[in-house]
Length: 193
Image (cartoon, rainbow, N blue to C red; front, side, top):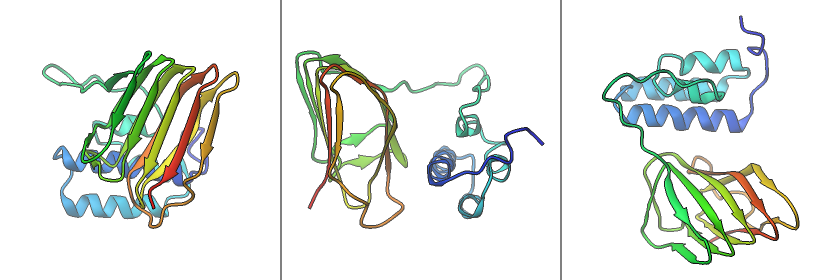
């Protein structure tokens, strides 16, 4: 038993595990019944030791707790995050746009508008990594979208204004914000009415 097997898990770890299972299912590594069985076990797991074996045999299982990625071997293609540059610009994603699994946002003195109300998700969530300064980020969530920004660093007069509240129903895509917003940047989150 590893030293951290007894560490308790919460909803963020469970949601990450289900996203990874869904990605593995979509890529053909799991059959539907196996996906359903494992996803059900995720929601009753209480510790890392109970959760980890549910993903241990999957190529993306290393990402559950941030472990090192296995060597995928020759011929494996890794899709990089979609790069978004907001340097002195306004970039908008709204309407029926295709949401990638990951985005990397950089720039300063810019504005980013992400409206997810009619967006089409390609996975169970989106991770947005920020490296922006003196910028504005406006995020509009749909009724079942969740947002997590606990890993988003803020310095200076940067702020996060979360006006979204809880999702109307559980189980929707999870938008995770990471990286850093610096200077006088602001992140404004609301939910579509």
